[in-house]
Amino acid sequence: MLYHLVCPAKYRRKVFSDKVENTLKQICLEISGRYEIRYVEIGSDEDHVHFLIQSVPMMRPKTIVQITKSITAREIFKAHPEVKQMLWGGQFWTDGYYINTVSQHGNEEIIREYVKNQGKEYKQIYRGQLELFEGLP
Image 1 (cartoon, one colour):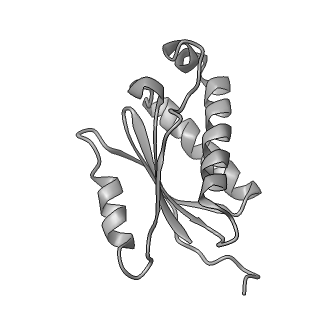
Image 2 (cartoon, helix red, strand yellow):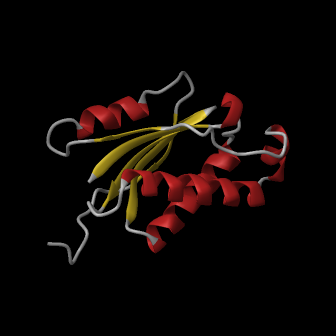
Image 3 (cartoon, rainbow, N blue to C red):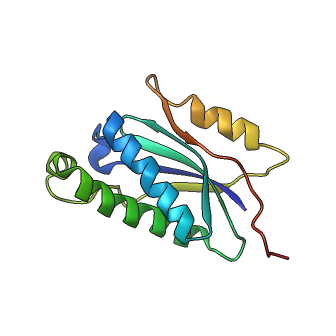
C-alpha cells in the first residue's frame, strides 16, 4: 500500500530548519529498519511535512501515523531542544493529519509532484525507491 501523509507542526510553527529536516530524514530511515514502513519521499515546507509512504496492507493507516508521529517527535525533541522551546515544551505535531491511499499505476507521480511543489520554499528531504516487500503473498 502507498500512502500520502501530511503532518503539520504544532501551532503551524516554522520549526523545519535544515538541521531538523536532516534529523527527520535519519529518524525515518531508522523507522524503516524497524517497521514495515518505507518512506518513498519526504518533503517539507517550514511548518509541515509531506510523506509518501509504502507499507504492508495489514498495517492500518492509523498505526503508520502513530509510529511516524510519535517516534519523530520524541527524537527531534531529544536532538533539538530549541525546537521544544519554540513549542513551549509541548507536542511537536498537531493532533490532526491527512492520510490517503495512492495508486501506484494511477496517481503516484501526480502525488510525488504535488509533494515536491508544496510551499514557496519546499525542500525535498528524502527520496527513496519504491520497493516490494519480500515474503508477502
